[in-house]
Length: 562
Image 1 (tube, rainbow, N blue to C red):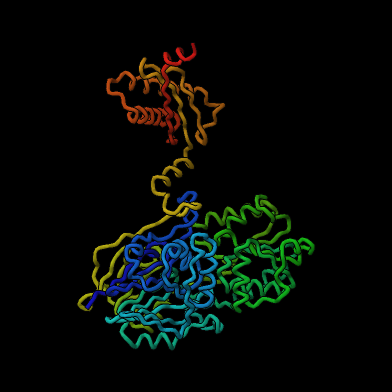
Image 2 (image 1 turned 135 degrees about the horizontal axis):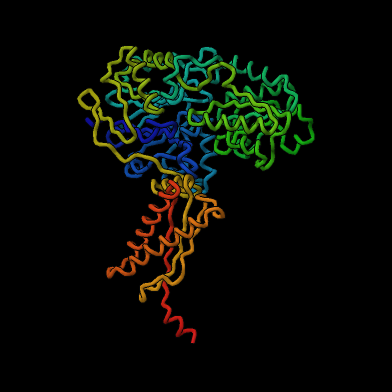
């Protein structure tokens, strides 16, 4: 009998970038194919996707990519995979439509059409594996969990989920289906850990809607709402509140309009025909009749609010009397950025309030009690906490132990680990290649740690350039070096430092010219090291140093002149 292998390729010890492989024999099922938005230290990086080496090396074994929902952390990396490989992609109706928008935005993957729409009643049989689904509650409709049935037991992947007893039919969890799955052997549960530290269940969504409506009701000027467009539940609440107070809604950005209109067309958003208007139509209405929804590029509305507040937005500027409502819940890494944004808004004359100010705890992910309920419904033999930084995975492990699950049956893995089931128990096998592939513009994977280190250095201490011309035959510096800097010092007030730096360059070059074993690499390295030492002693900074060495032969130039 073949071994069952569970391989996380992304989503562990990080936020987003979910991708997990379940392998049995010569068949591999891929669960989700997501991306991650970069943290502050990834200078200039647009998004981060999983390293796809394992998939490329085993492409003949891949039977399908199965998607849990339509958020970027589950579907965002698809275009970087299906552009090169014709792998069938399975998902619910809404998930597939959103995946198509993602894939069509990249000209390399537009030719891909192998989409398979499934629902909670679908079961797909392969040679060794069978894949089925169950409905879950999340902030977007049509969210599904996935069950991979293998000859040695079931592997269950929850995707993003929470339990909400008041959820509408479109968002309601199928508890009976979960109980039925738990009647059979669940050999491993891959469960959402993104909210594992919170002991509080998420607030009732009806209470959240009431808060949004009451917040909007008495505003006299324009209302600008920052929201993530893929949070369909929150978008519905904003639309309903706008309708109730008699305001028309303007969506900024082509991607936001495309997603919203797709969701409306599929019946997952209930919006009155005359509610949505264009920016040009909004200019003809009084400000108290307008509500603008800013979703931001790649789902990041906070940075766009900063542009609005500093008059750098291409269309809207925050003005005196505007009311800004932040309907998204930023990650901990963004808290400083949000505080800065609030300050900029107040300086521009606007007023700002956030959903987080309501005292209502909001999350689309499972709380402690939700995680324990999932374990008690499925009765898994083993738990693999997924999606979240290590502290969240560890919190999930402790929560699971409170339900009676033995510590040795809980696996805190990292990306690339291979968990192999053999002799009725899991053990770690040799790891596979896994990591980050960074996307910068049209470059895929051409940005590495060295480039990021250089960008970090440039952002902190700037760049220092030294240009010197030498005559190697005569072993002398032909002209005084030209030195300049950007982002390092204020040049007009530091002329002496530049002059002294030029002398350091001359000395380093001269020492190399007088060396019988002259080497260009050694010359540049000596200039860098001597300048770096000198500048640190003078300024306590380490700029990036770029020596430019040019060679001339003066005798030859004179002959040519004659």
